[in-house]
Length: 183
Image (cartoon, rainbow, N blue to C red; front, side, top):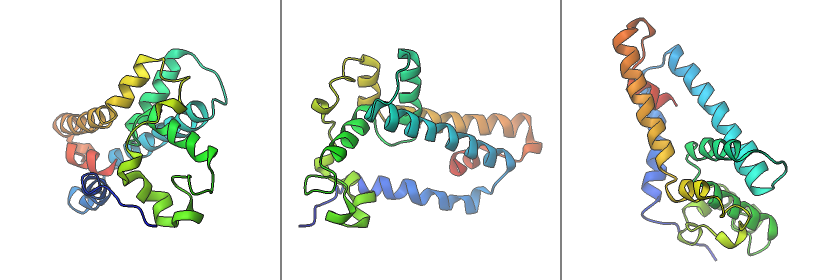
């Protein structure tokens, strides 16, 4: 049985991924490329070391401040909140490659396992019962509830930074639009 995807979330998801084509109009500068690389590396640390290894598997211990920084970096990668991510990943491991696994390629196919499950209405809510060790932190609950805030603040910061650089250092040949599109 094929599951349905959300008609509300899908257009935004597709537009966000198609937005990279705007590079045709924005052009590329060294500043944009370096910014893109730096943000990719830092945010993937948030996902890999934070969301995956720390929040989902609890493979190491850290301070509460560093825990928050990992959550903030992960959230800035626009992969929803830390509690949502950890809960779904724990659920995946609990039911790996069974009918209950929300993203098993052997059950629902490659596309569903990598993209479709994220857009399914039944997977939108955080399963708090799977992360009782994490819900006691109000800052993590805040990031989980307002998971769009960090990526939007990052996007606005890139836009403003590009405007400032274009105004005061035009030789860098970058702009707010370019920094936003390239990252």
